[in-house]
Image (cartoon, rainbow, N blue to C red):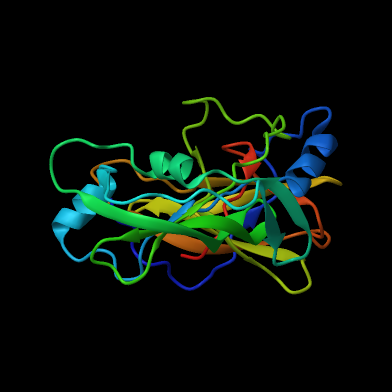
Length: 264
C-alpha cells in the first residue's frame, strides 16, 4: 500500500509512557552500535533509469537474473567503510560472484535481467552511524547505461540490542518509526517520519533519554471506531531532547534497533 506524501513537519511528542528502559549493559551495546558497520538503508541501488518496462521490474522483484559474462575477482581482500561524520572501518570484501548470488536468487521462468559484467566501486547508504561510503560491486545490466550497485562488505556482528523489542501484539498502538529524517544543527531535536491511518488524530512519539541512547516510541493517538478507509498516511514530527543528541545512539522502541535514516 502506497504512502501519501508527508505533510509539513509538526511537533507532537510526549514524555515516556510506552518507552521501555534500556536493559543492563545497554551502554556497552550502544557503544558497539556506534563503532560497527550496521546498514539500515537498502544495500542494492538500481540503475538510474530503472526500469524500462514492466517485464524488467518484474524480473528485479523476483530476483530473476541471468549471468551472461564472467565476473572478476577482487584485487584486494579488504575494503574501507567511510562515514560522512568521520571515522572509518576496514572489513573483508565479498567477491563479485558471492555478491551476485545475493542479488540473483530467482533463476526461474519469466522475464530476466541479464548481467554482463561487474567492477569494484563505491556506493553511499544509510547506517546506524549515518550515511557511509562503502565498497560495492557495480554490475552491468544489459540495456541500462548505469550499473546496479550492491554493497560488497557484510555488516558487523550485531550486539544485543540496548532495549528489547516489543513482542508481537503486546501493544495495540505502538508501531515502528518509518525513518529518521534529520537532526537539528544544535542536536537538541530530531525529526522522524511516522505512519498513521485516516481515522485517527495522527502519530505521537514518546522519548526516553539515557547517557548512551535516545529511545523513540511511535504510536497512533485518537483512533476512532467504526468504518474507515485503508489509507496509510505519513507525518513528520519533531521530537525535542533535554540535551544534544551527540554520539548517543537513536533507537526505535518497537524494533529495539537504531532508527532507520533516510528521507521521505
